[in-house]
Length: 120
Image 1 (spheres, rainbow, N blue to C red):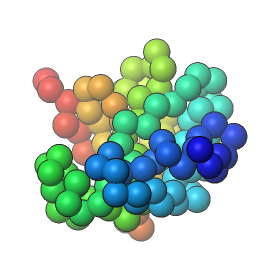
Image 2: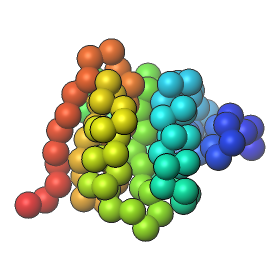
Image 3: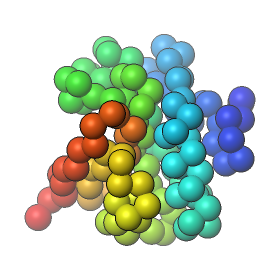
Image 4: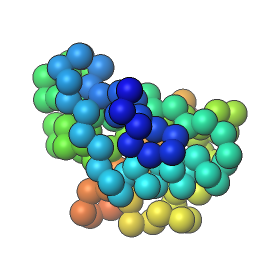
């Protein structure tokens, strides 16, 4: 496993189909390290890099930032996703943030976006 920062390794970012796509954007990694440091608990990367075929298979957005290595869906141990999203909106407002029931999406595209896909 190639460590890319203090708390993350490249394998954690790899496409789940096994194709080998595992690009890691430097800014995204820095934000994830910040989240890890702020909450002081592990950050699990549920999904980061996705090749186009895998993104389509899992129903990802057509213009998903995952296919460019610019996005991660994360869960922070014992921290509600809304708390993580609130922190990201305060400290990293230039990033895109998606709210989901069990994870938080973060990406570093050029034009920030916000969305909420939680069940109501």
